[in-house]
Amino acid sequence: MTVFWILVAAATVAADQFAKWLISTRLTLTDCITAIPGLFDIVYVRNFGAAFSMMSGRVSLLSVISVVFCLGVIVYWIVKRPKKPLLCASLSLMFAGALGNAVDRIARGYVVDFVKTTFIEFPVFNIADIAIVIGAALLVVYAVWFDEGAANGKKGGKNKWNR
Image (cartoon, rainbow, N blue to C red; front, side):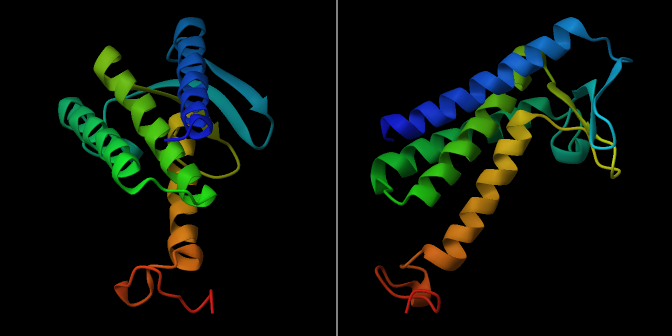
């Protein structure tokens, strides 16, 4: 991993953990602060599951999955040495998001969520979740439009967008 992408991941984890620390030390579970009216509120929620509270109560399993994912990204980075900025950004953000939530699960036994949208009914989420979603979206964009080896499963092949 280049230094820049390590810094992106580290800054994302740091922002996530700092925000979670602020929320968990300054709010109670019943507090709600309007951040941007009509857009989102800040609340303190303990999530004992994964996205949308799926697999609630399976913190150990979710911790292992997060750590294995992070290790997989590190191994991929070492073996493949990706150079494409879109792929590197995707991997860095997904790694940081998985690591941020894994730290919570291992240290606290739950994930601190705090962003509650008010314009649409949606589960409460955090900075790590945002990083995972953005990273996954970037990976899809990369795979569909920029991965030259994706067409016909050939390395260095051209897909329909790169002809």
